[in-house]
Structure formats: structure tokens, C-alpha cells
Length: 313
Image: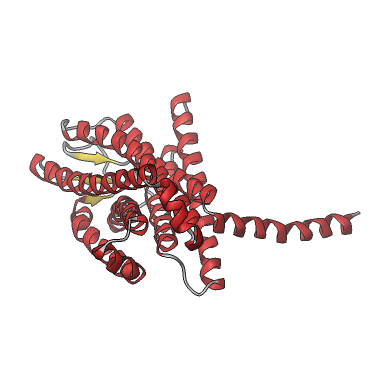
């Protein structure tokens, strides 16, 4: 195994391991919160679902990618490729959609009182689950073509207009299908990113222009918590937009060539998965509830370790 392959394999392995660990911790922390608290806040429900979507993305894309880099072949047959690629496309789509949803919900939460906002705010908790269902149905419909073009790798050269993922091929057969798929996916992503950025700019304006007023009004109503949540949302949005920009620059380049270099495809996979790997750690670092659950779990484990050491002595 040469140096370049080793570096690529270690990079994917670290990214996958770190991402799966972080998102699993977030999900377990929220699972415990759901067990101990009557109900989660809308922002907490969205962050929990975001962690699930990111974990889904990592398991269906980065895990097989890492195994392929380290020389494992024939991981999936044709039906397996169709299921994995479809699940990956949905997970990737949900990641951007739920981040957008998080930004919009937080913008409404901290928006100044008004006739429409006053009616909308109390309805936010009841809108979370229907919004989740709508996003799942939307993305399942948009990604429905993925199984029809996905197949296990074939021996020989890779045909034109085929995305060689290593463990699977996505063969669009002709330039028209290739471009239509790219435009549909990119159009959806750009629409949600535009809405995400717009709502995040609105949050920043509110925090900047009305910071003193918001602190005074919200102090008795959890305004500090709302401000921290808003800052978490802004951080996640900035993180997503950075990786989204790199991802789509590479994707637009890929749409302009008939045969894509494996190096270029690997770069896109790495950058498009970086948000899923890093975002849970921003959630953990900024969310007091999750940090408290992690500290509590660590403290519960510590006495058992101390008792074990005492018995060994």
C-alpha cells in the first residue's frame, strides 16, 4: 500500500470514527433526556434528528468508502448498492434540510413579538414532527432515481457518465440523465442553503441590534438559553456553508467531465462528510443539557473504576 493510499485511508478512518462517535453520543444523550424529561424543546428535537441524519450519512457512505480504500472488494451486490446509495442520498439531503429547519425555527423563536409571530411561536412544537415527515417524503421523492442508476462495480473500464464510488457505481447512461440529476440535487441544496443563510442573517441582525432589549425581556423567560441556542445555530450554519461550498465546487466540476478522476471523487466525499463528522462536537460543546449528561455518565463510571482498582490491590 503506497503512501497516498495510506494517507487517504487513515483520513477516512479518522473522519468516520470521530463522526460516528460524536453523533452516537448526541443521540444517546437525547435518548436519556427523552426518558427523564416530559418532552424535548423543538430545538433539541431538531438537533437529535440532525445527529441521526448525519449518522445515517456516515454509515452508508464513509464506512464502505473506508473499507474500499483499505482494499476490500465486492462489498455489495446490485440490490445492496441500490439500498445503500438511496439511504446515503436521503441522509445527505436530510442533513442540509434539517440544518435549514433548525435555523428557521430558531429565527422564529427569537423574533420580536408581532401579530403573526405571536400566533406562530406557540405552534412551533406541534410543527416539528409534521416538518420532519414532510422533509423525509420530499427527499425520498427527489432521490428516487438513485436506486435505478446504482449497481455493483463491474470488471473493466468505468463507462462515461458514471460515478465510481469504489464500492458501487452510479451509471447515468447518458449526459442528459447525468446533468438532470446534478441540477435537481444542486437546486434542492441551494434552495435550502439560501433559506438557511437568510434566516441566519436575520438571527445575527436580531442579536446585534436588540441584544440589550432581548436580554432584558428574556432574562426571566430563558433568554440566555435562547441566545446560546441561536449562537449554536449560527455556528452550524457557517460550518455547513463552508463544506457545502467546497462540495458543490467539486460537484459542478464533476458535471463538466465525462469521466471523473477517483481522486476528485474522494475529495468530494471527504468534504461533503466533514459536516456530519464535526457538527456533533459543536452541539455537545454548546449544549448544557448534553454536557451535563456526559459528565453525569462519566461520574457514574468513575466509582466502578475506583472500586475495581481497590479490589485489584
